[in-house]
Structure formats: C-alpha cells, structure tokens
Amino acid sequence: MKTRASTDFSDPARRIVVALDVSEQEDLVRLVKTLRGAVGMFKVGKELFCSMGPDAVKIVQDHGGEVFLDLKFHDIPNTVAGAVRSSCKLGVSMFTVHASGGMAMMKAAVEEARSCAGGPMVIGVTVLTSLSEDDLDMLGLAGPAQSAVVRLGRMAMDCGLDGLVASPQELRALRAELGKAPFLVTPGIRPLNYAADDQQRIATPKKAVVDGADFLVIGRPITRAVDPLQAVDAIAEDLVQD
Ligand code: C5P
Image (cartoon, rainbow, N blue to C red; front, side, top):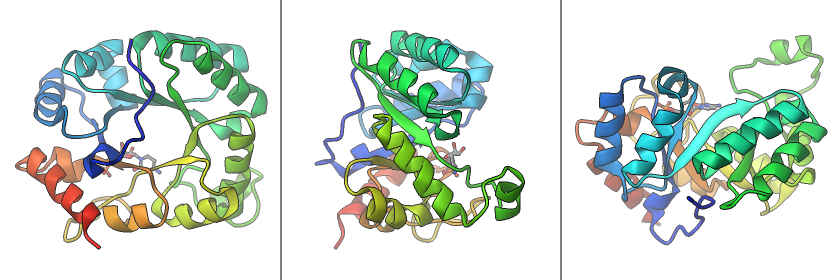
C-alpha cells in the first residue's frame, strides 16, 4: 500500500509534481521511466484518467512513481466518499476535491481518507484560475477573486483538509491569512527563459517557493523537454540558489 505524499524536501526536486497531460500509454511509460525517483510525484488528471482509467495510476506505481490523482471531486458527500474510498484502494498519495462542494462534502472526503491505510493528502481547489471576475459575479461570488480564494481556503482547512491548490499569485495571500498549516500545491510554474505557453500568470520555481508553495506542479517545461531529466535537474538547481 502506498503512503501519503512525502513532505521531506531535503532534495528540492521532491517538490516537483510532473503533470502527465498525455493520453497514450507509450508517452506515459516513457515519462515515468525517465523521471521516477527524480521527482516527488506524478499528476494523473482528467485527460489521462478518462483515456486509460485506473490503469494509468497502476502503471505509474508499477514503475516506482507516486500519484497525485487530480480529478477534482465535486458531488454529494456520499458519492465523494465512495470516490475517495476507491482512490484509496488505488494507493494514491494525494487527491483533489472542490472546496465549493461544501463543508459536508469536504468532511466526508477527509473522514474517508483518514480511515484508509496510507491516508492520502486531501487537497482543496478553491476558485479555478480560468474564471474571470465577471464569471464569479455570475456564479454569485461577488467581490475580488482573492477574497473567494481565501474564504474557500479557510473553509477547506476548517474541514480538516491537508492543503490547497494555489496559483502563484494567490500564495502570499493564502499564507498571510491561513499561516503555515496548508500544504500549497502550485501550478503555473515556468523556469526562467521558458515560454509561458497558455498560462497567464506564471512564477519561476524559486519565486513560487519563496512565496509559500510546497509542491510545484510542472507539465510542459519537463514533459516536452528534449531531455526531461535535465529539465528537472535545472529546476532543482534553481531552487537551491540564494
Ligand atoms: O504544462 P503546464 O506546466 O502548464 O501544466 C500545468 C498543470 O497544472 C496542468 O495539468 C494544468 O491542468 C494544471 N493546472 C493549472 N492551473 C490551475 C490548475 C491546474 O495549470 N489553476
């Protein structure tokens, strides 16, 4: 049985969670074989899970990798508890739920995660970064996005979640409001001199960690590199620079 995600970052590369945004088994195996042991975890998201199902998780684990299952559960508490039970059986180390699913749903997810061997980390998604303030207004979440992020983040922590997904521009506000407790998992990371791709607001690995990130979710800068292992090494080196 796999265990909860490790937070021993004495090797800075253990902060890296490689986003496996692929749909073919061949690409998955190539990346995991190359990067296993060099990074902290591999993120299996909706694209890969809808293409390969739980086999994607098993393949990563069979090659010695740990899995962050990013399916962003959002349903009635009983259904989410069932999804968490099944995720626990798969031996994932971390998974996501939407904080906007409400307190009963988040508490059900935490209770189920704590009752299973290995007890994966439960991470809350606050406000999707793709939503503009007009979108939020239409959803009835008036006011600056940042206040909704902090409010939902606080709710998630009150429900006993282990941490939150936080974009680089949310890190400081979340740390200021919620202190050291939440593990913050941050996408939108781009090494210096790397293109932004479709990301709007980015930070370098170093800046994200200085601002409070614990785990760095990084996809294309690693997965599309000519030498993915070298890309990981360069990021880890950047992290230890003063
Ligand atoms: O390739 P790239 O480094 O942009 O991949 C980032 C990963 O983090 C993708 O899997 C993306 O879906 C995810 N993500 C994100 N922004 C968010 C939440 C998740 O980029 N706000």
